[in-house]
Length: 164
Image 1 (cartoon, rainbow, N blue to C red):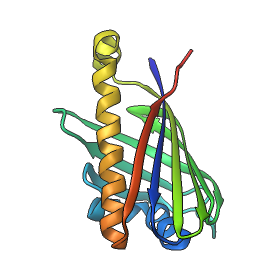
Image 2 (image 1 turned 120 degrees about the horizontal axis):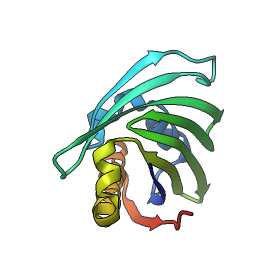
Image 3 (image 1 turned 120 degrees about the vertical axis):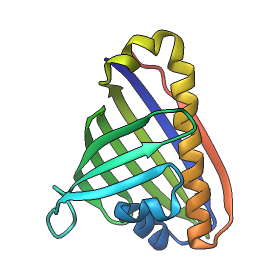
Image 4 (image 1 turned 180 degrees about the vertical axis):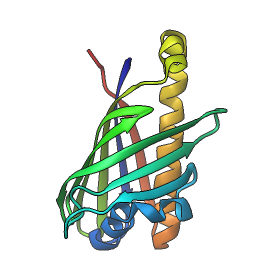
């Protein structure tokens, strides 16, 4: 398996609560986030959503789809949302939100490994393409969130962290 570690920052001129709600309600992502083809609730969680399991289908510019499940492991409304992925990607994702004045900063840290054999075989040469693909999808998310909230998107930043 091949490990990846990404951080994405979105800065949007909007209050934290509607930004939180849009991210937290991931079943609605296909309506506003290009690249999210499906988000299906498999199991409900507790009153905060901890223990909820969802299946996501993602598609970008490359000619393949990724399907994986995420179980919500922590919810600290409206600042942190964490989950554990399994399936074609396995690992953890952490959303962190903060507000400074009228700007909400969203940081998403995604630490995963690929489990599809073909992706692991091609990783030595295709890794930069896979990383770029991730950044494209995350940019679509920031742009879609801004459209959804009718709020200016101030910036999007991507960082690929060293693994291993």
